[in-house]
Image (cartoon, rainbow, N blue to C red; front, side, top):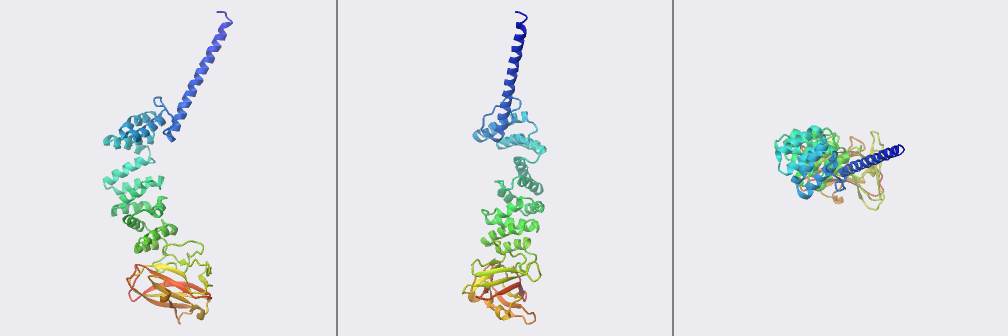
Length: 401
């Protein structure tokens, strides 16, 4: 071989080596890319058997678990740990496969490791939640359930876990301590209740009462209370309502209309207003001590213009109200009823309080014929009335629910 040919051969050899290196690099990049993709898309093409195949191994384990059973997933789960020994998801996957394959001792060892790697893995949380419940350690169980629901408030197992925890007084007490921290799932617990049976609704009531005020706003409480009302659980609804919405134990909620909003749909024990276009309702004196409602009916018939649901024990009650800046003769156009139904035939005008100008009162007898009473203010046509300071008080030892 001539001296001139030698450098040419050497150059081609270097080029070949570079090509091989690039092909190897491209292959590794392809393997790495497919492995990362398999973490989000388990059915995408991926390869097991190279040093960094944790994603592919986890995908194979997950698919094997579903298609062939948990025992068939164990080998792939172990392979994923070899590739990434500090992955909590990989260790948890092994623990779940061993747990469902009835290899309980091995599963506990795996979950002990995943527990040390971090508590953000749902299956790890569920495992230790179950272990705590089996040992009646409600404090630890409530911590684990709290951690699980903070990550995923809409977890598909949420209501089942809450029902198990809330089935005992000790469980409800432990959960109430976590709820006092106002986690995000507290609101979800109160509003996502459409499919709950009555016994679980009762558990939620006790949970909310044990937790105390300051966790649920009135909007969330409205939805919860309305569900209870629809189920006939009126006493429970009122107890929760008073805790989170009412500023006192007054038998009439928001008697000074401080929370009244004509633009907001109302529920529960809030004031309900007529939705007819010929019933005019407006707030007067907002932000002042003289706050009241301006009412007028432009129809040709008397209408129930504002009303409220009240839960009362049988007995005698006195309703009082104020009509500021209203001529007493016109104020008599306002009548009130308190009974099981909205019944104009049972409505009565107010009796003027001679010792308090602008104040009116009417007494009612409540029996046990219905679990809740409708308090209704009726207004005759073409009478402009202002209404404020509504209060309901027992007479002679009667009391509210």
